[in-house]
Image 1 (tube, rainbow, N blue to C red):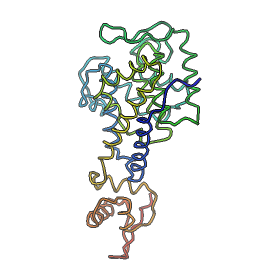
Image 2 (image 1 turned 90 degrees about the vertical axis):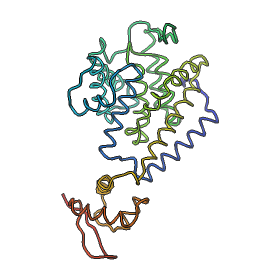
Image 3 (image 1 turned 180 degrees about the horizontal axis):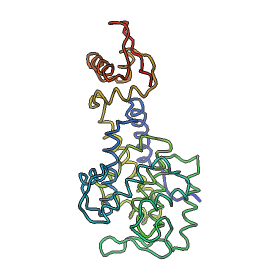
Image 4 (image 1 turned 180 degrees about the vertical axis):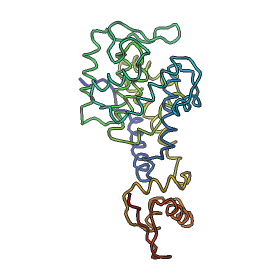
Length: 319
């Protein structure tokens, strides 16, 4: 059964804006960031998602943990980060439409933090905001059935992936299938659903924006609960995604280092090319910058040079 929601004019405008930005990102070759940028985005995502759940570790401390350095902090906070690193290092292995994969991600994420991680709850739960009960989740006996229905919905190819990811996130939070870890699982699984069609979401820390607008996030969930459909939450999440893509686009070719450009270009499989070919990929750099890049690429033994001036050809170094 399809979960209840409306596709509003605002949602359609956001989908159009997101689609345009995704096209621009692909055209600008930002969808395969440098290893350093990927590492930074992973740290930002882990920090933001766990901060929402009350984790006290700073971004600097999480960076240290990622780099296998010792960090002094609350035991559970450190464990949450270690678990999250394992999950985000395995993002591409999870299957978005598989409940089994979903449970295995929860087991990894909540390992040693709760009893029986990776299993649906067996008792009733409520969501509190301060001392007030904000939401009473469906009875535990209904959870497996409701989650099965939700995964069936994900298999509907007629639905837009951007919408499906938001609907799943909201409905999962409403069902609250676990004793703990529901928030981080909702945000994680939305990323995994989006990655199926748009690989760039592996490197997009949109949870940073959720962390910045945390009350808006909770309000969108609460208002959707009250309305009996996820329309407002869809609008909120699409807006977050749109703004996050905007931030990613600000990381354009002018901010890329020469080694970032060279490493990216060398993975494109062009065995033979000219300076003009190189500049067609990185449209925002000058011819002198391109020449300096290519000279450095030769020094790094990424490729070698034949000919001079206008007839110069570069050939990728065979491994």
